[in-house]
Length: 142
Image 1 (cartoon, helix red, strand yellow):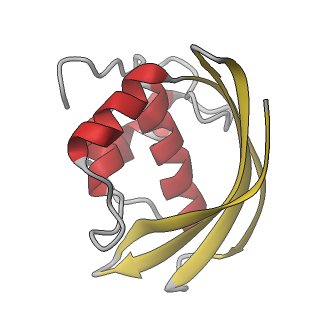
Image 2 (image 1 turned 30 degrees about the horizontal axis):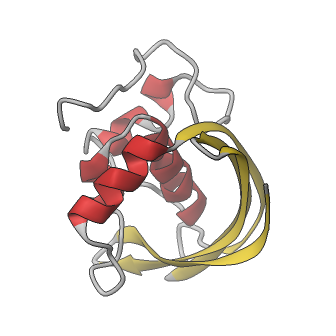
């Protein structure tokens, strides 16, 4: 965890919008105390990593074949304030699957104003851990 990471307290609501506390939801995944059991759980932890500027988790949860440059991702994390996540649906990605997708809409604020990211994220399981492979934009609105 870098010095700019701002994780919530364990008893605060998790940024991923699950309604659970950080300590019962994404916290243990971000701190490495447990693996994400599903592709959706990893996607939620990645969203939380983006909201808290947790560069280490964002990079570690990204498949090495598609992972961006560390400096580019760090700039992206610093330039965007993520406000809300709405998971629209999943395909596969369960405890007994090796691949899955998660469709979501994430709302953010940037220097250019409000942004809406509608993405279908693709995940694969490697050595028992879910990894983000890529995202296909479903629609973006400004």
